[in-house]
Image 1 (tube, helix red, strand yellow):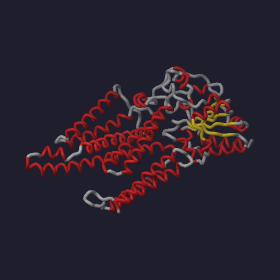
Image 2: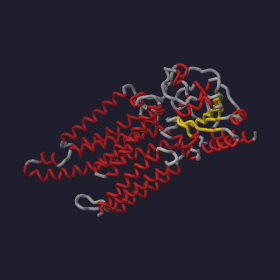
Image 3: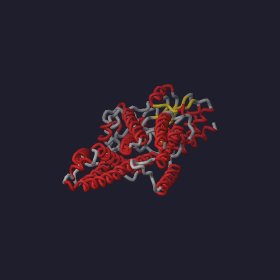
Image 4: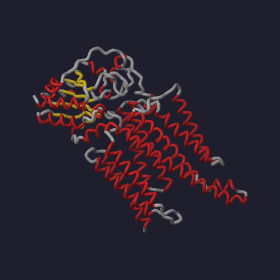
Length: 487
């Protein structure tokens, strides 16, 4: 009876994961979907703790340790989530993703040690007849061992890579590469796979040593894997590492024959993989190019989008900006990382409402890779209660730019850079961008003329239609609101 109840708990958890993921596809239902999936996970966890029994009929024990760990993790997670700034959200996502990979790797370590213990017992027992090696071979299922090793490798790479990504996003880790690093990475991966094949296929007497060598090399590979990838590609890297964590978690589901863990891992792995593909498509680049191209790693483009002096730019005053926007028919706002840095999303929403009261149509143009993680700008604006209907994806926004009177760019840079279309020598050449230059007037808010996160100078700033509005986004928007109110 208890087994049937536990099966029902796992079924509920699996169904809520699928429903939650479906609801996450729509901003209007995303929050509810997150809660639905969390409720299903809670049911699955409680069911496992109180109803799970092993093959010998033993239940889980040490409830104090179990609930103590859950309580500590819940408190730390809750406090971290409540205190995190929107600018730090990408590194928090990377950190949490890394913790998932670490858990998957530790599960493999624990299960391998259990396997070694049981193997030793069988070998000692059968050793009297002189058939110890044969007994040891039979006591280990190659498929079971393969899943353990895969969980170890993928989880370790995900953990180490996510920690480097976390460091890059918060500025504590700089891009690092050396000549021939990609060759070293490939050789390192081949060594890991070779050792894994030897361990699974032959289960040698020094298998424990080989296992921990694979563990260490996988961690090293995760570090080297992310080190040379440039900052502008971090959204793709986060998405890819997230899919790694999902696959590693699915391996844990196979090990424990846990349906809900398996379902969750598969969903995360599949969703992360699809998101990675979509992000690469949005940048018009292959995943291989992202991983070996080191885009955003500090290299400058040559030609018009590079270090070459572009010429003069013109500034616009707050009062002139207020007049232009107040008497426009349609205004398009392009949010970028600078908006998040200034914590200006609420001021931006206030400006939108003020212009709407004056009869101005206001919408937001969202580029798929704006910010530091997938959906960063959507989350940022949702926090300020911006209507989901006003958020336009790149394709729809580009259709409306020709009929837009004013485009206000708040901290975005690379996603509006015309070099992606006009300069073959630019590292971002071929990447789809927001066609803001098709609007009648373009106003760019930046703190300075420094290049964006990809380290590439933006030719848009020197175009005839473009005017620069310098200053911190939050203060500029607050002052702009005051100017419009005084008109």
